[in-house]
Length: 234
Image 1 (cartoon, rainbow, N blue to C red):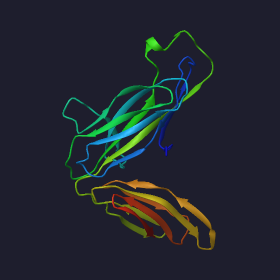
Image 2 (tube, rainbow, N blue to C red):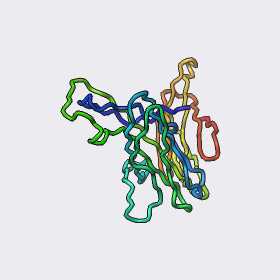
Image 3 (tube, one colour):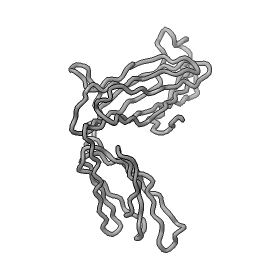
Image 4 (cartoon, helix red, strand yellow):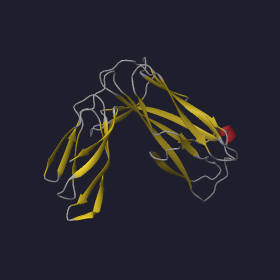
């Protein structure tokens, strides 16, 4: 089933002579369960019935994931890389699919590595663009995707630590692998039918995060990590 989440950006264009095909991606989150796993394929679909999809693929390493100082650093091939993505450009015919191959070249590690890959429809090459002088007044929307890639360490540990003081709920992770807080909910103890869904958050190693609860009563989150899923009563 296609995942339509993690839409990266919308771009407004002024030239109708560029026909943008419909981009779909089968996965928005890729997790390498063990660093010895080397290959993972993401399928990219062109659902347009008439136009080719010209695709640009841009991979980034996430430095200090989850922190305020987080950075996206373009992958460099000057030195021996730990991670590769191929191809960096592709042409996908109408109603067709193509693979973007992810290659993990580092099979050891004490902490997880995190990457993000931008999949962006591009303008066709100049020789295929048609009449360059054709200009139109109408705008077009391009939908791009970003894929999150997580490579777990050899011995992953997602350590869920939490504390609640009043209505302030705090989480941290002193482990070496992330966990995801999802499906959070809290109901008003005075009016149980009045429930509020709480923000989801991925807690990377070394991260701390706090949320203000709307009520004084108990709350609940589901925790997802490499071992599975479990519920927390808070």
